[in-house]
Length: 79
Image (cartoon, rainbow, N blue to C red):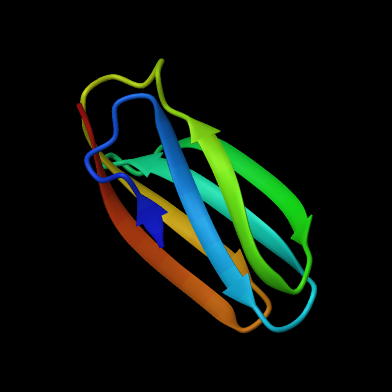
């Protein structure tokens, strides 16, 4: 889950998993340029990762979440 959407300052990425895993978050603009890449190890349970988007220009972005056996893309609007 990503929230809030639309976002103005900080985006929260909430990940719930029954096991520990390595997690990768990437943000792309609609031209396909990677603007951010963040990797972290998360523990079992629910983890919230904050991503600062204050310096991003207004518009639409793609947030890609990857982990072992998981690959999901969310559309996010920056105000």
